[in-house]
Image 1 (cartoon, rainbow, N blue to C red):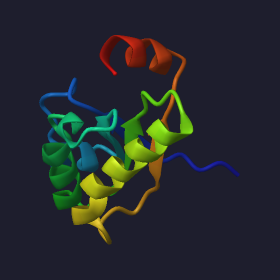
Image 2: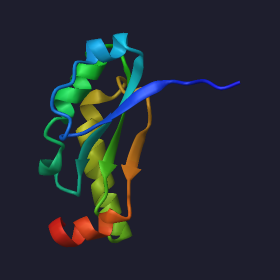
Image 3: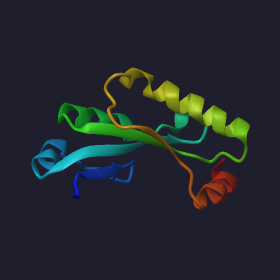
Length: 113
């Protein structure tokens, strides 16, 4: 038996999202980029708009933080920042919080970190 559940992965690059329409079309969850790096100023520019829209549409929501960490210490700093951003959504987020560490993370860290 297989179960198919449709969702979306959104970040600042997704500008116009109609969550009510998406929900009616069968989208059940949203995984949202909350931010990147270790500074609170690096919150994704559309994160709050996206999370509030998804929650208003009664979608399940999870979030991820794009990691630039090059050490365990930097990873802990990023995790603290991520958790502080997510604090206001405690009890509302029904999917996990993720760390998004990709091959390009080191390149981004060198360029922007």
